[in-house]
Image (cartoon, rainbow, N blue to C red; front, top):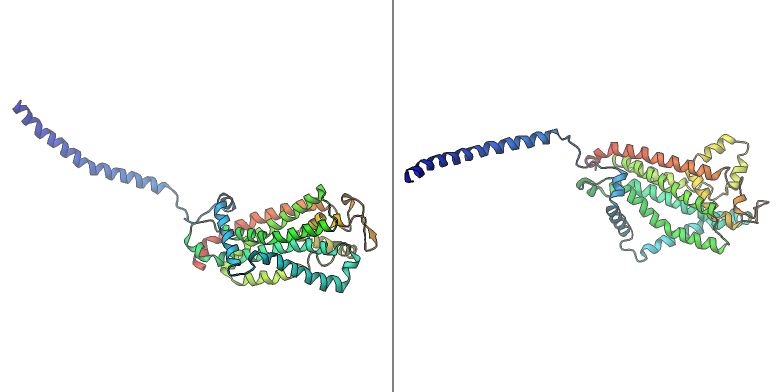
Length: 338
């Protein structure tokens, strides 16, 4: 027994030594295999994102950004969000008393205040989305440089901030319309929803496009601020659509060019929702409104205004897709330019 155990002991030692020597070789082979698998994986940018799809998926992060921007906007303010009610009322009063009373438009058009304020709500939503979105990437440059997140979050968050700011105006418009005799009708409600959607998609598209351009040339935020000064004049807000349509009867090309503006259609749709129902049976510029909102047509509204609204909504959505593609092509250089 002793002789056998003495003979087996060297063999066991040799086997253990061989196994020990084989371990490094096996580990090296496993490491080489892992490296080969990693090398087969295509490289990608750590900041690559799924665009607007990922923005929808990260709704919680979008909510945090919106809350952050709203808090920063009214930080140190005594009235806070109450300014969202004060500012539109001041703007409305300025236009109504200076333009409406001086030019006498409130005499020719019943409920001229509702007509103007319905347009003002849509224009305010668009201009706020456009301006805040254009500056959003530059204002959040520390987050853009350090965090791997879809950069589209910032312009989209700016659009939602503009929506929050515009909501009080919509409440004021609703109350004023009810006091003026507004009664809802299905086509009017559809028109109002369609108008808001046009402004939302158009504002988001331009916010994405100009937010990307503004990273490379800060002049774009000044260009946008200057351009939005004309918004109140290129849509039927100060003047009724009926007067413009009548004046352009002999100039069909100019009329067609005017109607190519999606904001024009959005404003008309909002006025169809809130203003038209308050004018039923009343006389406007010597012409009596029908007794039913569904019977109101040209020249108070564009021809086939509802179909045209869907066309403008589709155009705004296609424009958003194109602006998203342009944004993704330039976002790779954001970090170095910020």
